[in-house]
Image (cartoon, rainbow over all chains, first blue to last red; front, side, top):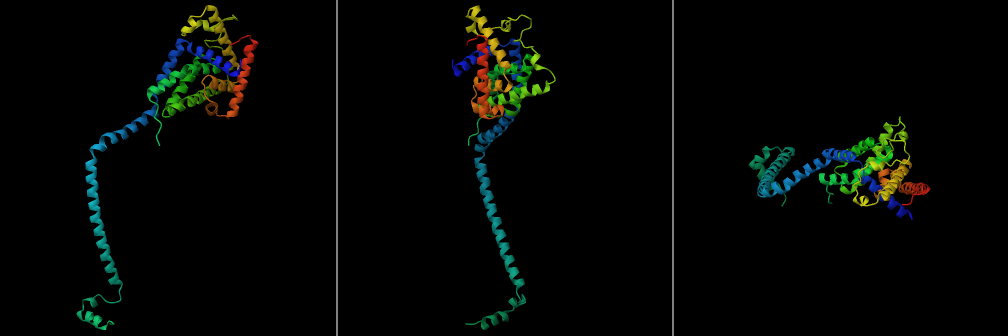
Length: 124
Length: 193
């Protein structure tokens, strides 16, 4: 008899033996199994998270598609207006900075004679 | 990438039901005590469900075997003050001084195939089984673990090595030695399978 055949026959004997365990042991094993199943915590937690995801995907998202689209359009419009305002403020700040940093007094720009002098004095 | 589905309660229940009897016998070979073996299997089941209940179904056999062997080792650590090798309280162990006592006579046969056999054939089979079980009990622990996982649980070499926490080469060596020891022991008793 080769090794494989020997191992196969040993397995057959052991299987027969396993099916013949005392009823009291079978009963204890059944109880132990039920207790273990009651503590399958990790799997239960995983399923609950999966359930939340499934609920969002299947129930909330399809009904809220129109609402979500409207909210996105309004947000885009508001963003555009706010961006324009920021740009205008930045331009004014730039002009103010240039005026304040200049050597020429601000009153010079209000004097009509100064303006005429600049035009006449500039090279052709 | 698709995440493997978690084992449902029913799938885990089916898996445990499919391995619990063999696990009990494995523990019994190691500790030779019904109550201790049942406690060990219960501990292993609880640990599998609590810690690995979210693992894919195909990983459960290897994980369960690893847990079972660890729980058996823990049992021996706790009980090392006792001499486990002289404690024979198992239902499969003789409770009287009769040398030819057959422990399986006390068990209810659930196998209809065996019921149809003659009493003489049943007796021979029970005696053969009794000798096989005793010889398996006598094997060194690592050889017994490797042998039972490979040839009873039908795990491959890689799975057995992972469950035992050793190399594949060690698994092959343990299995080969166990097979030869068992074959020699049965031959010495005049038993042919």
